[in-house]
Image 1 (cartoon, one colour):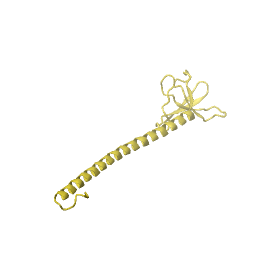
Image 2 (cartoon, one colour):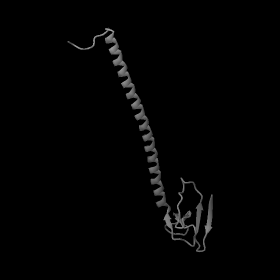
Image 3 (cartoon, helix red, strand yellow):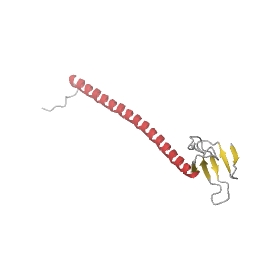
Image 4 (cartoon, one colour):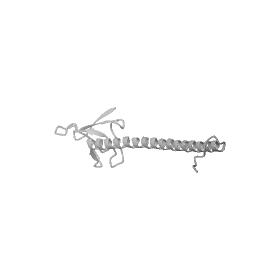
Length: 133
């Protein structure tokens, strides 16, 4: 949903209500959402997007080019994706540690069973005790 605003100085701006993926929440120095605007006057930067104070024309002086914010959001998104990957790898690592611990316990249990069976067979005289005299 877009809205168009005309200002007394002849400039105009367009603001949009966009999802976080399209436009991040940027706050001006009034701690209010700074609307995303577009340079409308003719010149080399016509069409360039920027965030400005929500109280235009009585502004708090806040100004930020949208491309600067976009770069920050892109880096934040990459960090978030890496954090998700790290969390998944940590969960997988924890699961592998538990699996390894269970397998080590199984090996120990099998070794004890084998030792007990061997002693039983020695006691029954079915096999030698493995000692040489």
